[in-house]
Length: 173
Image (cartoon, rainbow, N blue to C red; front, side):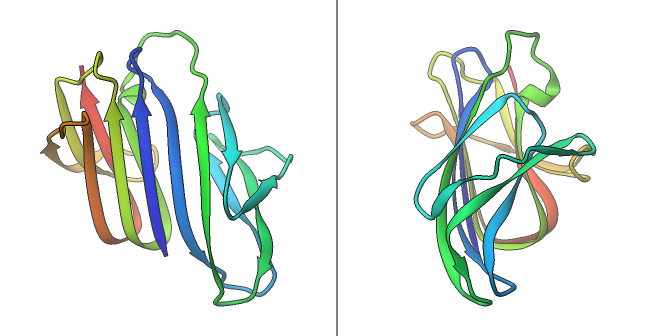
């Protein structure tokens, strides 16, 4: 029902951490976990309010890694809960690629109240930042508009709803 992603780019120009807050609604009785999908295995997932842990089953679906975030309790159909979790990245020192210069969020169904924020380290500010839509997880940019940084060195976008899309920010140094 709601999604807030706040990403932090470090002094080394790499993604350091994201803080995600979600409000979810169970579509089936007995919902006790949600999937967690990511495009790298070089990360640590820490859970907070609304979560009781992480499934130890890590598996790969194509190029995507997956596990499950375990909820503090099972939800009945139509019941909602709020979750908060942090993803910390452990990228090795490597040359920057276009994939390092973007933060995307894919949505398989629909989500309302989407808030995406990317904050840059004051010592590593990008030359330009764009808000963009991509043609799928691995696709090219299909639409973009230049974004500006605020006084906290962050770009921000709020959307009332998105459906079956991939959106986010990309930047150049």
